[in-house]
Amino acid sequence: MTNVTRLLAFLMLALLIVIVPLAANAQDDELVTDDPIEEMVMDDPFEEMASDDPIEELIIGEPSVPPSFDPAKFLGMGDRWDCGIFDNQAQAQAVLRADSSDPNRLDLDRDGVACELSLGAQDHERVPR
Image (cartoon, rainbow, N blue to C red; front, side):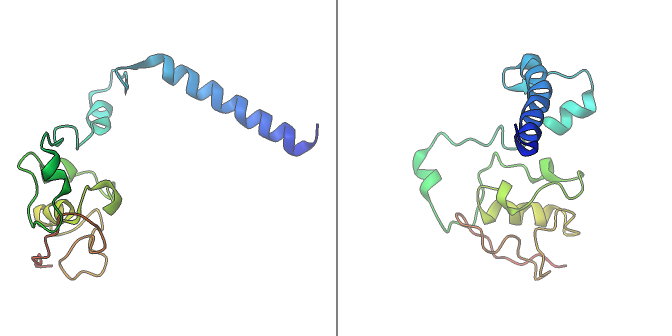
């Protein structure tokens, strides 16, 4: 075996040592933890946002977000979320509107519009910065 092959084998073994215990502790696709802070951080902010209406999912350009979208779930965690985590630009804009200090850096050019290149529902009403 070459040194590269040995290194790859070692890395694969190390990954198995880490992943197998995590999978064994998984319960309903969530990691089990006794730490309430860790549980809070592991919550999926999109968990309650699923739409039952397939037509609503296809609408593009509507400047609103579903009533179940709560921008507060994305606040107070520093720079944790980026544009790719949101379903559309309007959701990112709602988060920017909820905290115009923009800790998630959703409005890099500071023009008051978050995630300008994101697809889906749009909301380009500027947030004062």
